[in-house]
Each structure stands twice: as structure tokens, then as C-alpha cells.
Length: 233
Ligand code: DX5
Ligand code: ZN
Image 1 (cartoon, rainbow, N blue to C red):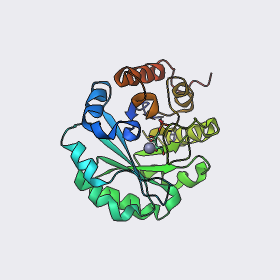
Image 2: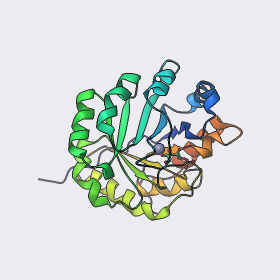
Image 3: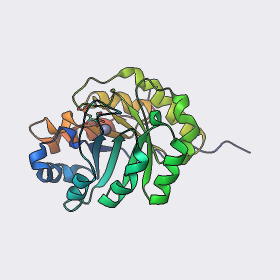
């Protein structure tokens, strides 16, 4: 029997991260970038898995009433099992849990049962081998390109080989996996991650710290779309 054909490359998209938006004016910030994308990245931090605190289900519910974007909810928390239901009920479309928190099999099953699109994240120093057993059970793999916790950090290029490993494994298995990157993504670094195989680009400061966030989303997407799929140079 021949090897499975690599699936069509999944669509490239920018997921603006509200972490860098003006929280006193969140609805307007989201509305401002909505013409440029169909995903919104929502960072949830518990002050335990990462040394920072952000938002919970009530903020997701408030945003849900004002937005039809896909809510890509990044759970940087040590006990996701307790909160997946509340985030789903608040309006999350997809949740991403970190492989470092453990109990991954159970968490992926719980997300499936809740009807959530499922994501699995890995910190920059977590190897491909930690993700590999789960690739056929997730919709999205998030390769962190900074250590999670804060916006505005510098892109860690050492993560690029892991992105390429995930894409190669997905292609070999015939999986149309979304590979998302998060941290230090802008018009320049997005080119490197596309070459490695990523197709969903989280961007916080490179969107919301700009004078024109909508134009910034367009600029990152245009830079990504200018790269030939799988090109290494
Ligand atoms: C960091 C968060 C990111 C953050 C990225 O832990 O997961 O989503 O918003 O911010 P930038 O794009 O500024 O690196
Ligand atoms: Zn994030």
C-alpha cells in the first residue's frame, strides 16, 4: 500500500491576540480587526502555570455577544479540566491546553465530548516527542515561539525545527493539522514560521500596538501568503 498523500495545506490565517488590546475598549478593538480575519486568540492565564493573570469565562461571554469570530482560547492554566466546560458555555469555539500540564488523553476526550475544537500547545523547550502521540487526536498544535505569560517578547527561532517536525509528521499521516505559532510573530518572523510549516499566526503586539491594527493583520497575512508552502529558503 502506498503512503498517504499529504493533505492540502491548511488555510493561512492571523489570529489577533487580545492580550495586547485596550481592555477598556475590547469590543471596539475586536471589531476593528474583524474585517481582516476569522479567528480571535484569547489568552487565559492563571498565575500558576504562568506568572500572569488575564481573563476567564465572563470576558469570553461578553465578547461572544459582540463577535462571530472563531474564539481560539489558549488555556495557560494548570487545571484545564475544571474550566473547559465553563469556557465552552461562555462561547469558546476551540480550546488549547498545554501538554506540560499532563492528563492529555483525558483533556482531549473532554474537549471532544464538549464539542470544542481541540488544540495542544507546547512550550519552546518541550520537544516534538511530547506532542507526537497526540497528533491524530487534535485539530491544532500550538508551538509557542516565546515562553508563555506575556506579550511583546522576542521570537525564539530555535522552535522552527519542531514546527517542521510536526508538519512532516502530519503530512506523513495524511492529517490536515492546523499548526499555530504564538509569540513574537510579525511581518518578518511570519515568513520563517510559514517556511517551517505553520499556518495559524497569533499576533498580539504586532497588531494592537500598531496605529492601524487592521492594516497590521493584513500585512502579516500578506507576508505569510507570499511564501511558497514548504519552501525552506
Ligand atoms: C503569550 C501569549 C500570546 C501573546 C503573544 O503567552 O500566549 O498569545 O499575546 O503576544 P505577542 O504577539 O506580542 O508576542
Ligand atoms: Zn496565546
